[in-house]
Image (cartoon, rainbow, N blue to C red; front, side):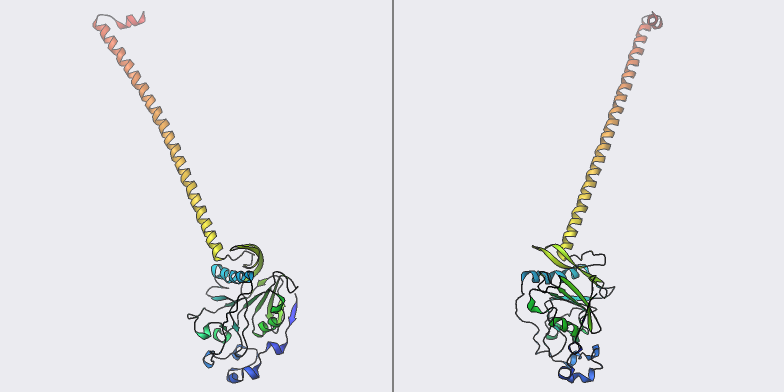
Amino acid sequence: MSTVALDTKTVRPPIPTLWSQFSHLRTEADTPELWPSPDDLSVENLVTETDDPVDNIFSEKQQRLLPDSLYASWTGPGPGRSFIALANVGLFYALRLPPIVPDVLVSVDVNMPEDVWIKRKRSYLVWEYGKPPDVAIEVVSNAEGEEDGRKFQLYAQAKVLYYVIFDPIEELGNGVLRLYERRGNRYVEIPDRWLPGLQLGLTLWEGWFEDKYDVWLRWCDKDGHLLLTSAERAQQEQQAKELAQSQLTQEHQQLVQERQQKELVLSQLTQERQEKEQERQQKELAQWQRDQLIAQLRSLGIDPDKLLNK
């Protein structure tokens, strides 16, 4: 397990210049009480979004894959606990500092705002949600993003609990996937890729997402089972329906075969009964004919017993 020490001057927000107007809210530098009350702030001058394009196709798809699978297959870290998952949305952790824009962020025990068009609801403002995000994920496109440098320090300053660097083509030269947990003023690398605070894991998975085959970063449970995307769940449900329909068809065919077999047996029994009835009728007819012959012989004065015994 490796640890990365953070500069304490970087970890603590620059209180004199940024937070002096909120001194009446402050207790100590590293506590949530430092965050200003939403009622005390004007956010009209914050730039919550720009028209900058997504950097590449892979990153765009990866950014959608992670939130999609959470909303499709995760109910949160525990009963009654909510979450939000966002892609490419600004994280504002200090009023007069520009936001960090993680490729994906996840925050538990918070709810999606009813009206996301309100200025202060358009982005993730820490003082609005009352807590930092629990996870920030960066997908490395090139070495210019400073994911293991400047951003590393900024996420720690923003008090993000887990920081994940996914470097699919190893631009940074330190491995494809690294997970860090913030402990005090240090980020400690997590070797087993499990986030105990969220009861979620991350894993690398090779396969198809939409129309692209690649190695993707995916969420998983403790046993390593993937959290399915909405499309995968729909496909799974469709396959389950088709399997159930196939089983019903097989059961129906089996019932039809059993009915046909019963009908065949019944037909054979009916035929045997008819044959026996015909034999009985033939015997009765033969007996009746014999009795008639005997009666005719006796009427002619002929003893049939003597005649039959000759």
